[in-house]
Image 1 (cartoon, helix red, strand yellow):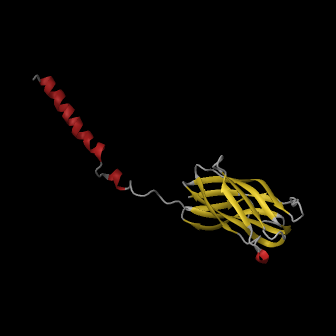
Image 2 (cartoon, helix red, strand yellow):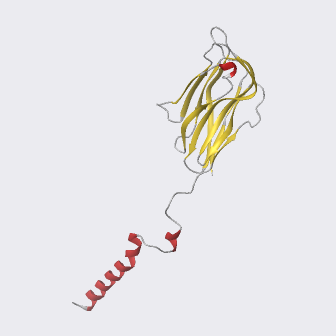
Image 3 (tube, helix red, strand yellow):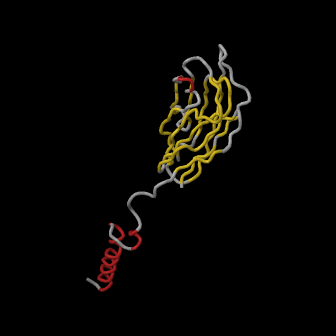
Length: 192
C-alpha cells in the first residue's frame, strides 16, 4: 500500500470517528437542555369587548387549565329571548375545539334548553351552534349572563383571532324573529 493510500485511509477512519458521536445520541452540552416534553402552553382569551353593554353578545374568558381555555359567550340586558344561533370561526391549525358547557342565560325559570353545538364537518375551523328554550317561553336576560362556554386547546404559542358569523338572538313570536340591534363581539385565543 502506498503512503498516499495509507494517509487517505487514515483520514477516512479519522473522519468516521469524529462524525460518529454526532450520528447517534450521546451527551454534550447541546443535548443537556433538549429532549423531554415540549414547553407547556398557558392558554387565555383576549376579548374584543371586555365590558359589554345592554344588547351585546360578547365572548369573555372563562376558566383556564394549562393549554385549555373556556371562552364564554355572554348576553347582556336583553328582554324576550327564546334562543340564539351563531357560528364561531377559529384557527384549526393552532387551536382545537374540545366541547362546550351549558350556560345560565337561557336556563332561567327552570327551562332546559336544547343545545346543538358541533364542528362543521366541511370546515374544521367553524363551530355551529343553536341554543333554544324548550318551553317555548321567552326569558329576560338581566345583567351579563353566559349563554354557553366553548373549550379550546391552544396547540402552540401565538395569538389566534376568533370571529362570530351568522349570529342572531331570537324573540318569542309564533315565528321567531331576530331581536334587532344586538351587537356581537369576539376576540382572540392566545397561547404563551
